[in-house]
Image 1 (cartoon, rainbow, N blue to C red):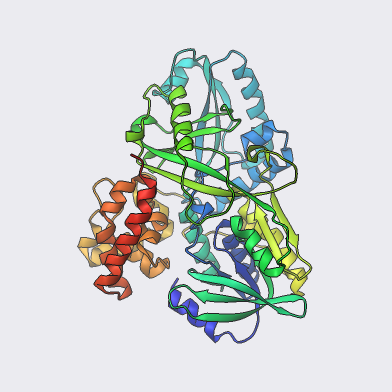
Image 2 (cartoon, rainbow, N blue to C red):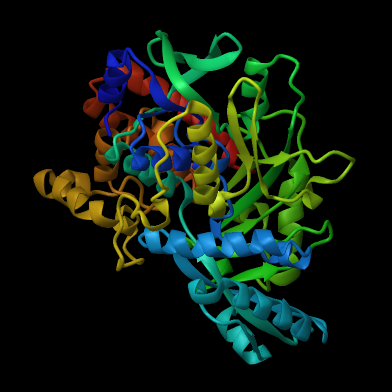
Length: 519
């Protein structure tokens, strides 16, 4: 993918795109893949970088949703379990099965969760990742030696999926491009064009040059997540707000807090949330919270009480108690929950997705979660095709291999996340051995990955590289700040930028990354 070539394609297109997608998160990218793979002329515009917001800040799980089963939302669980299986088939280099253990400290927990998770297995059917089972206290401690053993009765083991969210987002963008789609990051939609009362395109501003573009489309899809309402109000200033953002916070700890390969799942904390501690890139992701927020933000910040909430609950289940000094990074993400009316708390709002077609023909798809992105995209494109009067073509994404597809990867190798692109990165090192050096001794990334991100993955800033193309910002925020100057130097060379650009990038990145460090 090359941004200059993408921008040129937009400037050259004087007619109508079949489908214009606003938003480059999981849902928007899914829509672009679906539409392009059906053969429609597809354009996606993202105001910042792909997966900048919610889609790079998840719990890193591909799951059916055990908590929704408890709430009785069987249809949501069934759909998500099916999509979980398809994600693993279509992107096996990034999506894998993960063992979870529910520790039992009360005598009735074992039978209760054992029975519930057997239903979970049954709903997954042939796309299941492994059978759940009750295990003894000894087996529980063998799997998670840092678990608090006082009062422990045993546990229940079950299987769900795990992935790298922003890496999958990049691969989806590449998949859409390979199928003829055009995608632009740093292209902010500022308005909707209309022919009569019907939406007929968008106005957009290139955030790098300031150039304004007027782009015609037969149908526009609003897939902007927590920013959904702003696009609905471009269409109709009187439009009622439908999004009620909820903030989820996670902390990253060193592997010593969760040795082994088994994750912990605590079904119910004091506020009714599920608590996870999950192995990820040789670290542990622990979260999450569910805090209503008033307005969406591109860079949400964790609240002190959220950090303390996670540390407090982690200490209840871990024999090695994490402190603030142990936190390598803390990050916040906003969930685009659709307001169903009434005074419910955000933790009780269902995570089902929501699709609506405005009188102007604007198609809006929002809500949902990463696991169901493909199904959401299919429904959005089906509706967009009807609105635009396009020739009907069948969806092909159910078995469409995502860019990078490689069935067998060595997950101990940090480059495994590139799948079939891995040999090309190694080739960069063969040509220029210094690119094989680590960016930082506490991070698994080599300099060649910076070059690859710029030349093939449309990375435009240091944040793009350290925050999303690699996961340095999340794995160790302080270390990522320390390697920002070298990252900027490599990027400047690849992009043809000067020292002033590099220095400005380091300044901007340092300011942003400080928000991921806690004292």
